[in-house]
Image (cartoon, helix red, strand yellow):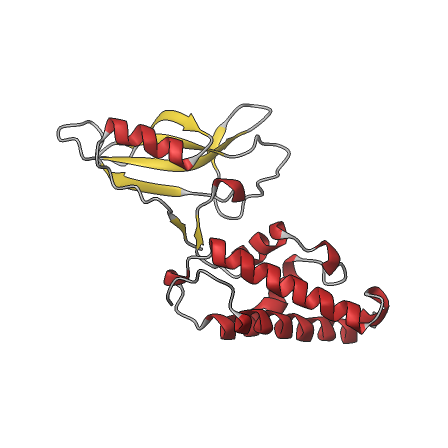
Length: 215
């Protein structure tokens, strides 16, 4: 699938249809009225289109479409509504925002471009370009610190970035020995800053501008 730079009306339509069908199923199963919840079916339909447009707009900025093999609109029609039921509140779509977009994308196991603002886990490594160094590679990894015992652990897929037992995740640049051991060099708030130091230590090291976080 080629990279998408603008919203696709077909994808928006597919999201809306998928979410509508999932909401109808929930309404039938629970006996709750979508019309009552959204002050009429026209209100529900407006929220359908708003959510569908928001998710597609968010996706064009964050989803690595080159790493997806499915046809995007068909994939959304088959899976978007069920994902919303699983990770969002189908009865409170007026509160659906970009944080819900991220949770749905993760639930759908979509490959995402790393973005510091998204607070998603990252682990990436690149070969050291300096001959004779003790480090075979350099790595950039998401970590977080436990508030009670100060233990630093990797921040990995499935972890809650808002876990109150931990500080917010950050990035660490490490040197990786030939035996696979990681040695911590410095912590950073942004990926760009971590790459900047890596380039000073190993000119021409091949860290991508936009690393892809795979499911």
